[in-house]
Length: 142
Length: 148
Figure 1 (tube, each protein chain N blue to C red):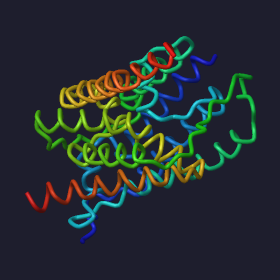
Figure 2 (tube, rainbow over the protein chains, first blue to last red):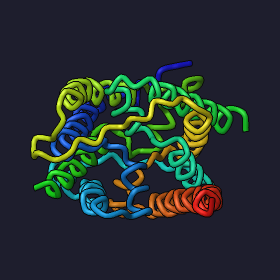
Figure 3 (cartoon, rainbow over the protein chains, first blue to last red):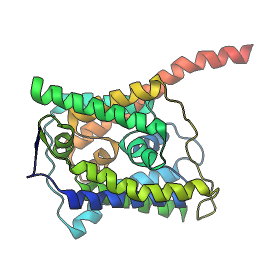
Figure 4 (cartoon, each protein chain N blue to C red):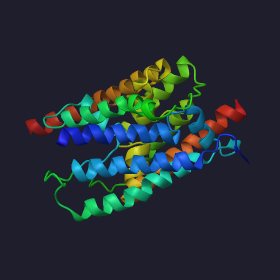
């Protein structure tokens, strides 16, 4: 293992993390909801009364974020190595996995760990482990 | 008011994701590449978010109502089962494959990236397949119970 100092951005990453925490705080203290993105989107696909408008608005906020960000700064140009096939496969796995496991990086990784939930700790360990193993296989074995 | 706060929370969440570097799949994969050229930045994202989240959820757990007087919906499920572990493992494989998880993918879709659009479409497809399969498995049982 070597550290990739060229891409290491502790301060902007910490600041971005704090904003994510503030957003999760807003949603739970003002709306009484956990900021789990996969769960919020999943609820839009199985619409129930009283469960649509707030989810729709939260997702609209996410989609509008690049516009707001562009007023203040320049987002780094994303490096997307995955081709069409890998993107489709990855999307399907993420959709299925987060539904089956009831959460993703935000719901389990941020909110669940903040709630000190043992369930979310197990989920976070599992998806981190699988992510590390997948990158190891794709980058260093294939 | 409730709807505006949900929009504002989504907006702040999205700006945080962009600032943190989470919307760059290359950076996410760099974080997961522990055995290669490792970029530890995303540990700082989680650290920063949890630092604030600890206080917010401690406060939320002590309250029965939100600051707007609405109901507090906190998860009650405490089961650590094959669904949780299996689902999370499958999610992790997809995450490592493309470097996208749901939030950053939606934000990148919002900035008009066609690769993110492909991922989001497939992700919604995965969620719909799950919902359909779940219905298929649970519906007959429910019907039987109804008849009995």
